[in-house]
Image 1 (cartoon, rainbow, N blue to C red):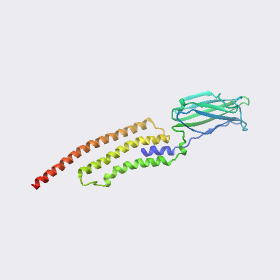
Image 2 (image 1 turned 120 degrees about the vertical axis):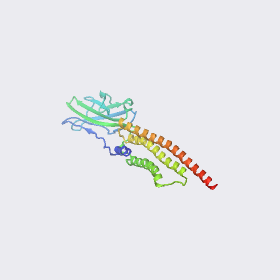
Image 3 (image 1 turned 120 degrees about the horizontal axis):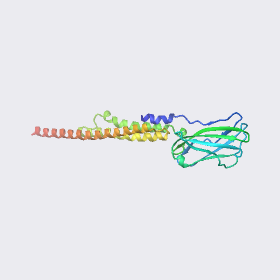
Length: 255
């Protein structure tokens, strides 16, 4: 499960951007920045051209902007009325909307009343923690981190099997062996949280079911550690009594 969490974001496909042009219609173009940081104000600028490539102005051409979140909610529906110059169409998206991390899609439809032409564009952008394009970040990092955090607990867990006896003292050997198991379980508990962080970094949607699964795994680890501690205490006490009895028997035999 931990491996799947790390590899799915890396294998995810890149987002597509589409521009539509009606026959003898309008073409809408824009800067293709599709990633923004959470809680920032966004300004989207658009330009409209007719079928021959001639720019249309906002004096004769009107455009409507529609924004949807990843739940399909229609969160912005308005006519674009903010311009820097007569060939510019501008849409502002404020921080109260971009506070929610996720994918957003938008639709723009434009109509040139002077030439009776129309066109539309549909595209999307992503809101994440830092505004970086995950496709172009180091794809090997999540894999390296995943391998590292999985290997370390496994090494610690199998140490008692690799070394049958850490010491000749049975009591001390038991404590070291159980400590290895306990540390391995603790590391695996931490791994669940770290893998969730890696999955979020890779823009893998963490569902409620997945969080429930991690919650159950976490508590199972805690219960296993509690059981191991209690059992170790009883086994240690039992070995201590046996060791003490052996010394007593040896003393009596010497007498």
